[in-house]
Image 1 (cartoon, rainbow, N blue to C red):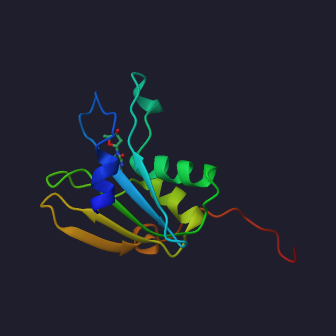
Image 2 (cartoon, rainbow, N blue to C red; image 1 turned 135 degrees about the vertical axis):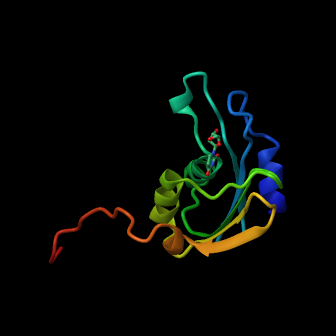
Length: 126
Ligand code: THU
């Protein structure tokens, strides 16, 4: 969570003023930071969690064990649905931590958060 706070310090959120930080832990013990980055064309904004995944994958990391997300002590930042799908792609066993609106740390698995993810349909016998 301390790393998620560090990542949050870099957030670019001039429109929502809602700064989010994520810290993604790889199986090898590396921690990759991500923050939300907004845009004047609001729909182009990216969440902290997906930013962390894009960064990590672009640096050769695809095996993740945990992610911590924070929007500050009063924020409450349970990962959005799009981020759940993206996190699941690389880490179906991921442990997810976030701070709720009261500042308490919540722990869930990605499977708890996204019970029936979309997976690419593979043909039988292949
Ligand atoms: N946001 C995140 O970074 N992660 C989440 O899980 C939820 C929302 C960001 C996106 C946007 O910049 C701001 O929070 C308000 O929605």
